[in-house]
Length: 478
Image 1: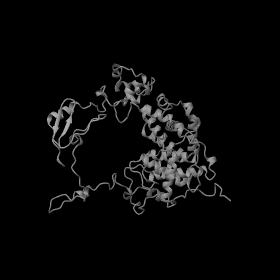
Image 2 (image 1 turned 120 degrees about the horizontal axis):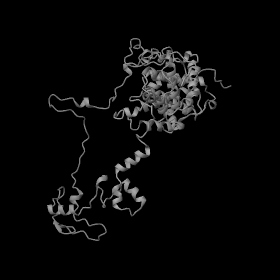
Image 3 (image 1 turned 90 degrees about the horizontal axis):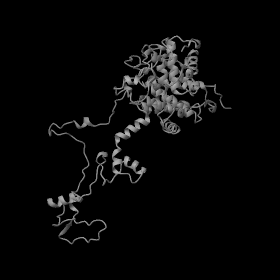
Image 4 (image 1 turned 120 degrees about the vertical axis):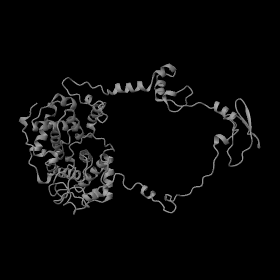
């Protein structure tokens, strides 16, 4: 008889130390320095850190000097014999032109025929470069076919290559004049692309803070096309919305998924990964489970492979394969982890540019010029909702807007301002249902096995936002 879903959890609950690093003896004296980590999360040992470049250079070995010879000791290289060659343009003399039936001149005297004159050149000695008279060099240079480099501003009628602009004009008609082609330029094409994409032409309504205009000259804000980037991400959201897949997973439950997400948050804290890595990993798990039926013994392997892929996508120095095998407590082999990574990438069709709610949240908070405590509270609400299965079918942009509005209500700062409505693209009535879902999730009594997120945001580094008093749904105001 097959075991029921409620018999045992799929993920072995780690000991009291939770996810730890390899050096357990040094954890007692380790101090948190400059990292935003919760007290319950273990610190990362210095032994586990790696340099940015690793052992990829032998520069130190090449710096060793011999005191006697005063020369640099270089590694032995394979000696390669290179024979001297004569350039074809110099040695090949008297070669007949194409489509001309001209017999080669007899040795020892070779005749070089040009369009105007004929010069006699003495036979060449092997391994010796021929020397041409200046007159011959001048004549060959004059008769050379003129070609151009790939430069749009130096094109001629004898050009051997055609540019994209010429191809466009050729489609309109083969009898297009040279003057009409000269009118087309790269600058005009750039203006046409800007007009089609509507770059930098977003009209801000009256009473709305024009955040992009204020930072127009800041190259790090990319204000010229920031709005277009987030509009593009918002248009891609329907592609990455998983459906209600739990009914098609006979071996899984919602509680198992919540345990897995809590474990993934612990990985993010233990390895000091970016928050974007966590959100991408959870999204990859949901996308995979919505298309593939898995056993409960494989669910933790799916989470580890998802975090491994997300780390390589978002991190500058991602953890190693052995690190993920270690946190799985030896439950899986290297071959199994790599095979799951390949399968997961195939399921998502190698498309990892997934819109994440965390990125939308930062954009909305910066445009509205909110303080860090409010933004951190919204981050806590958003990250705590990752364990709620009821939110997987809600778009990420709407989740970010609802979490930010709920944080404003909990802090009693303001309501849904015109600035937030413009930059999020949502009206208050459009996000109210999602706000109620998030608020009900916060009101549920926290379970002891799912305390990682609460402990994380109860730290002073995160302004202890997890201890913020909750609000009732009736208290919401516009």
